[in-house]
Image (cartoon, rainbow, N blue to C red; front, side, top):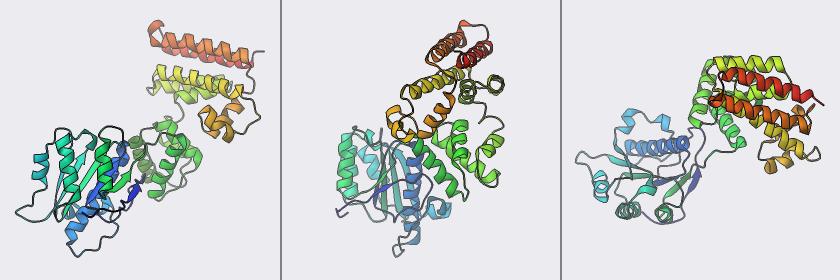
Length: 358
């Protein structure tokens, strides 16, 4: 394979069209869902090229466009670098007596031993005809030399960066919904994060279900209705109602959350988190905009806006007493008390009373 400037791509959050099949593709990152999608896309592009024959135009191919019949034109080997020997790799890429191409997927390339790394580099430098190599690498310091050498040899690089920030998860959800041909507003996306959590596989599945099972714009009401209270009765929703001084609604949400299986420990943690947020936002005053404070406080602007609204009626001493009540409840729900539900009810009642106290 001729060396040259390698191509670098960032994996799409949704299953997107893959570029023309590259003899060697290196997928870098540890975001499991995105890595898996990138692997499928690379295999799809290679399989389609092999199945179409040597004269085929290497156009864009999506992983979902490759049927079992297309893939059968090539031998696809999916192996882990851990425990794989250089000899076994040679056997996997040896020409078949029955013809056809070969696609080898090597997972977790950072675990490759010295001999296997050398064999991968030799194969990448001069792959046999109709042989495609797809290697995933976590991208850290472990066996970084292999990653560097593969890229320098001309391999196409696909980055799968971790999705950690709130804004990145919102963008991920927008992409999933858009790919399904649907629309969602920010309120609906936030409700979906509250209902499902931060795991990308769970979020992708939820987007798929909502897209196929509902109509119209996906908003907070749609998410709440679809999850039958799951989106509403989370620990954070209980905490929001308590911090806003809405005792009846907070207790109602608490009972629903406990009835649907939410752990009392998670509710206690959410109450503590909600009060800490009020303390952080209250300590900086109202002089700066939420956008200006977001980086310093480590929270999105919308959360700062919401905390400022909840701060009405709170004083420093009131927040301190509320924190003490939650700390006591936390001890109770972790085994010291006879009833976790009762301990949380007492904590919520105390929080609401501390909010209005002067």
